[in-house]
Length: 329
Image (cartoon, rainbow, N blue to C red):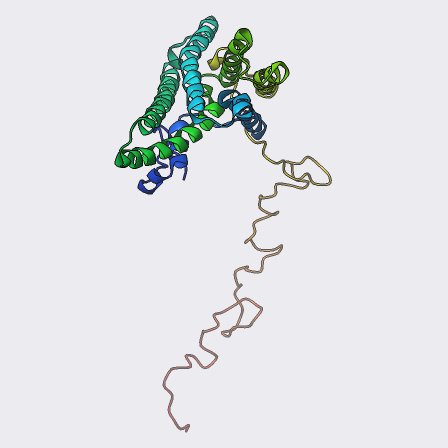
């Protein structure tokens, strides 16, 4: 189903989809106001960037060091959410100072507010999931465990799918500037990794593996972001430092050229106008006068092929329908 412009979910959700957390997350965390990608190559780069970002957010080094720990995973998710909540507005604010030199910022108000709402919605979902997990771990009531546990599992799928979506579109900041998601992904990945290097917290992996796994994600994200912004600059003329209103529209598909005839100009017919009338009137008489009015002919009968008289004129004996005596004298 196509999305309806101007609505958050685009009218894609139905009552039956509520039981499917991944569909709800797709509609909520990739709303209809996010512009579509310019070409498939950029989409592939974003998917690779999402995988590299997931390596940084989930913490592969934690899994390899001590096994999969849901509690620590949620702590990392809360930490990453707090970083996003603080870092994203600061980074966007710096870019607004750059863009205001070449254009007004009033037209960016709506996409900026939408992106902020999407960021707050995702952070709120992560916090809600963490509260559900704490409630299940703290209570011993079977009914609470079952009820909250079912909701917690739904929320787990919802947040996981939402994290995949918002990492790809980076909270819809592409609606503000096409290069902004790549910049935010780079800054965030480095800010998540640098504190571990500075404090020496390698989570029990050792120096070599710790440095590789901590720096692997931000280096990969930075390389992919450079490829993405470079492609936007070369193919579409979109630069990070330029005001969003200065971007030229994306080129559309080139229509196919008409076939060129063997000789002559492709758009000029070789003889005459292709749709003009033939020489002379198409319904006019041919040369000569086949319909020349008949000339008077001596005599009272009609001679075919010659002029004179009426074909229905009476013959020599006068009117053929004049009553005559049945028997001659």
